[in-house]
Amino acid sequence: MKTVYLVRHGIALPSAPPEQSDGDRPLTDKGRKRMHQVAQGLSSLDINVERIVSSPLPRASQTAEILADELDFSKPLEFADVLSVERTALDIAQWLSSQPESSLMLVGHNPNLSDLVGLLTLGEPRAVVSLRRGGVAALTQAGSGAGYTLDWVARPRLLKRISR
Image 1 (cartoon, rainbow, N blue to C red):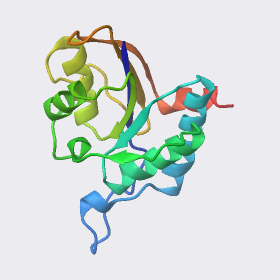
Image 2: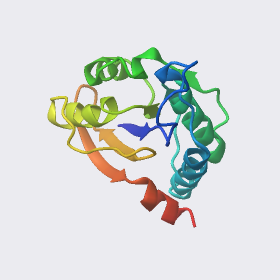
Image 3: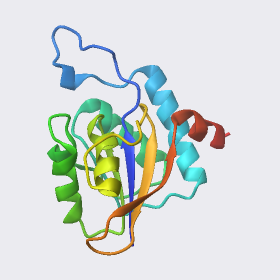
Image 4: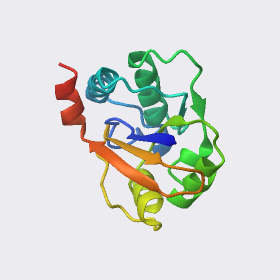
């Protein structure tokens, strides 16, 4: 059985400063604080993952660093271009099918992650859920080549409450 946790990056600056590209937008202070609360909520659920793989963009990589810290994840974080904004849910699903781990956490962007939920569960890349910034979806795959089941979706507010 394979479990995949999809995490949308936290709250980032709404626009990049003129000297930066849009892809370089970092998390805001509020985004960092909320992601610590989200990660603490996940920790209280005893989330265990073998790998955390993130988009290389700053807002996603900063989110992944916070998750790794709060989940006491001791392995190095990994970064994959397939989780970047420019890629599609189909690209991510194809990459995911070749990953051997039984428990993965992917940190990325919308609409890709919300579309990925639809692709993995229904076979078509459409948003059956809309992950908010800092939101998490948990999916399981019963066997190799089988479709995924959506186990749960949590808004940041819910995970924040769990962390208290």
